[in-house]
Image (cartoon, rainbow, N blue to C red; front, side, top):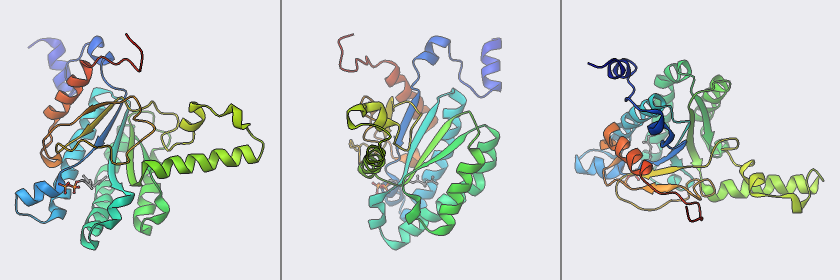
Length: 254
Ligand code: FPP
């Protein structure tokens, strides 16, 4: 076995050249869709689908970190998800607690910095405290930026930014004419992070569903048909490979 391959295996990292690394997205966003259909297919309760989806989530976070991708944003719970049954909402809330209880030590040890995107104030107290604790504990970490959207809506995020900027103008901190695209970026949850390069939505649905509306402006979209609980590291690599072959022009001609 070649030394490079052996080393890569030992590090659990695929052997990527610097050229391949260059072609990796700096920020990946994922809409983890299909848990309900997976559960139905297996004649299981929908909560079981979400639980299986959490297993996928663990693997995908690890792989993202192994590859050295800078930021990963995951859509865990949207502002619209409150409309689901009480039982399903409770199951998702419990999964959030379980996820942090089991993962926080490893994530912190791996230098991952956790950020919650969304309005935490509407969450049950336990969940809110757990999420704030995870953010505080990992605040100084400098590795993977792991953004987890909980009670998140893209339009609500833009309204929040608009209100903050309006307050700055009212207080005379900046003039209205000075507002730029950067000013808006600086008032989003993801401030300081690069825009999304690659958006993956599993299960074949091809919608943005109010996820990171501003940050996805120039993202490349990949829509694997596989349901989220069945999404593997191999599927992820295929999406990354598709991204590497896209010709990104950002509105220009090159
Ligand atoms: C969409 O599938 C998925 C969700 C609404 C929740 C995703 C949440 C997790 C994977 C786990 C919880 C997150 C954390 C951070 C622990 P769907 O139920 O809409 O699927 P369907 O369209 O097939 O019904």
